[in-house]
Image 1: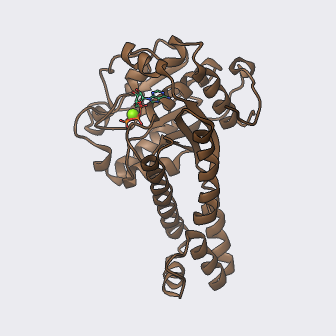
Image 2 (image 1 turned 90 degrees about the horizontal axis):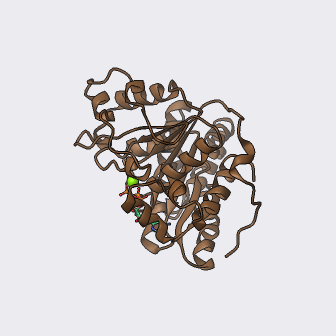
Length: 314
Ligand SMILES: Nc1ncnc2c1ncn2[C@@H]1O[C@H](COP(=O)(O)OP(=O)(O)OP(=O)(O)O)[C@@H](O)[C@H]1O
Ligand SMILES: [Mg+2]
């Protein structure tokens, strides 16, 4: 199996400290490897010397702690939401891995789906205040507004998908929902709602893509249309195909990139794949982090390539 690009080592870039960045890991479907990716990208970054806080936003189904090999922390996000904890900083729990801490999601029914707009905005602004170079958000499955908003608000939105039809369909659905949500936000921000209504009411074909809609807005009002376009163009989701077994599985990511451009006008950035590997469930079973427990796993070089793409070092 092959992949274009370089083979640098994680250790090479020890020491550099960027401003805080938030990376969100999502995917339309459950069980596609979001927590695996969040945990191990967090480990990669912390091994490179960055200070990392991984936050389990899969409220209700939190399991990031297991992928990081730590017991469920005493205080979880639900303590913050129910005001038992005063600050997000009180929830930061160290892990045995240097530079890496975790904020655990709620185990009860204070679900992300129920998170009020105010709570969401507050959590986002408090996240920005955390003492970390990187904050990693493990999002739950599904396309609730809250999940979409965390994905959109992050500096990088990373999607994991499996090379199978249901997961691919769900990924497209997620991207489409993100696009619509982003359009809605841009609409509010730029006050172009009436223009969009006008474009929608105009005769655009039933199969019109979101980019057709923006083109129509540009025709009606070029200045606002272009602003809208540049706002939406900033949306460049990253894609990881997980559990690949063949070159054909790897190539699915390239096809998805082409389809996203053609049908949604979205630049999907395919940043790499993770092989199907028995060490994943072995590490879950042992409740130990994969990269630490199995340093010779083929996933080490998979993650290495992905982290370099994400840090723009490849
Ligand atoms: N590359 C892989 N090779 C083998 N097994 C894998 C791989 N990736 C994930 N798995 C298996 O799939 C399971 C689900 O992965 P993970 O918990 O990371 O998914 P998730 O998207 O976070 O799920 P949920 O939506 O339930 O939170 C893991 O417990 C593991 O057994
Ligand atoms: Mg998970």
